[in-house]
Image (cartoon, rainbow, N blue to C red; front, side, top):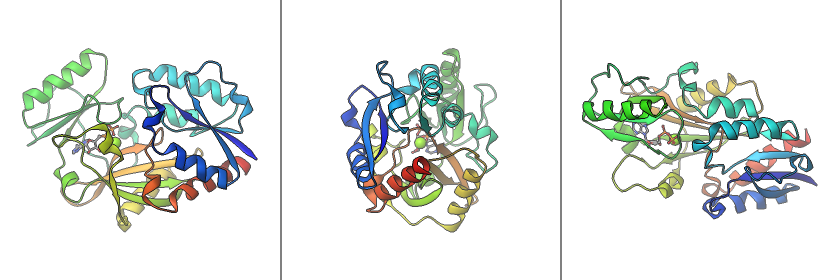
Length: 273
Ligand SMILES: Nc1ncnc2c1ncn2[C@@H]1O[C@H](COP(=O)(O)OP(=O)(O)O)[C@@H](O)[C@H]1O
Ligand SMILES: [Mg+2]
């Protein structure tokens, strides 16, 4: 029996509604999964064959501590995804270095472009936290300045209204194999809550989306147990990356019957070789 830590966080782990379905699929694949809180200092990580990073949803306010944790754990067991991936992926400045089309982004509160509507978000964030949408350039600039004065990197983007029409498409890969894709709920429309991050509809990805997602993943040399490539379309219809989620993506496991098993078999492949 393979033994893996299912790495979660302390504040209300019940928020993670994918844990039980994942652990059940792991068990069927011969993997005993134990939920473990990443920041618990008493854990002997060496007793696991691997530690699988999942719902570590409190890392955004303590990223340095989280990355130190990842490096320490990697000295004791197989960490998936690997620490180098977590380091590069927890700060959205990685988008600048992606060899693929991304959402147009202005990286400073100075000299904002003129766009009909703006999204302003911090580079280190999840769940649209501290993110605003506004048509007012002065309001966008003020939010970017407030992020910068708190020592954060601001990202200013045009608001892409296609997220409310065609919608954002997330492609889910386990050990680099496409498992499924979903159409996400737009998060910057009125009345959205954290729970809407987990609301989606299964969809067949278009060939140009699969091609772009796989090009992005092919440029990454490390093992990738899980990867979520979030895509939008620009005004000319071309697909573009809005986010590459290699740290703690929600996996939409309950949306496709085959997804939990795809995840478990990928884990077994990587750990058992
Ligand atoms: N430029 C944008 N245009 C339209 N919607 C956006 C834009 N940027 C973010 N959003 C909305 O906010 C959500 C969260 O933004 P994202 O960049 O994915 O960061 P995170 O998920 O890490 O908070 C997206 O899924 C999308 O619904
Ligand atoms: Mg996102």
